[in-house]
Length: 422
Image 1: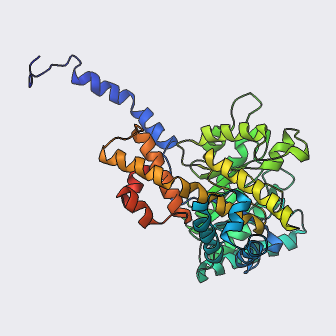
Image 2: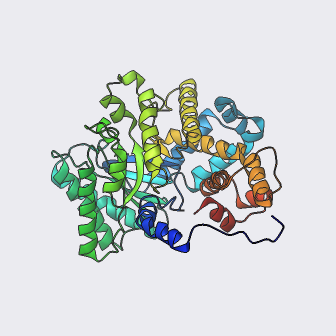
Image 3: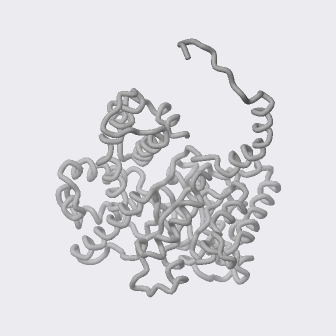
């Protein structure tokens, strides 16, 4: 065949059109089920505060207590780096950014807890707490002091507490509406899910509330907590997580692993209940595969080892927490729970070190990919998407600055968003 010679085809246009028509429904199903990442910021953690302990000063107090722990137990960058095993290169930048974060935005996502952290109370008491929580949230949002994401964890859909949970949710949302409307960063959490029908019931509640208040359909979403064995493997032996996501009808915003409830449901003794136990890894692997491509985000659980007491004990707890957070990040769990203000320094230290230590390599690979200059790694579009997503997560949480990323990649925020598929 000579250059420029026309090559004929065999298949008629009608065949191609017929194939396209036969796959139209499949194309639509793929788009519905797997819309991809929502392209918004994901918080690096969720802080849980019992409803009766939540006040207008909670976020500020957590930041103050976290800074006090740093000052007492690791008063400078070198001391903090020694505790956590950070390199000399990372010590200063990580320490400085952690302190700045604790002063500026100590909590990224706050959940006011009406479930395990609150317990069973007289109805009048929980009614008052739900209304008070909504008013405090509305005031914080209006005053610009609310964390980027905030909401409640209601009681679950099991029969014993279902009505109480629905009433608390209704009171909280209704009070928000009466106080100026639902905030953009509103997040609701549905705990102890066992069957898809419980998720579907929550959807019905959201739909009814939206209709009553003239809200756009789908305005209210919620997280699903994975705390029971039935939420991973159903009675018929099939994976339940995809069914939970499907039952949410596009309203599921996240899957949150519940370390202690899930471990207990597997019979793990209390001393061995941890985020890195094999039963936890199995559950989270199922969650990860089920959520991939759906736009539903993942969150790891928490440690109940608190950094309190003498300095040596605090250091041990910090090292444990730091290591668990790093382990989660390496396994693509970019969010987790923090149970105590003393966890905030190591949460942000682990997150910032994770993104800063990989900045140069990720940026160089992405720059080479965009420039088509090659390098010692041959990257494909999917890897370029992961590289840009990594840099964007670092930007979102404050681990790196846009100037640092642009200087290394020659790419701006919009170009990174495009490469990441946001």
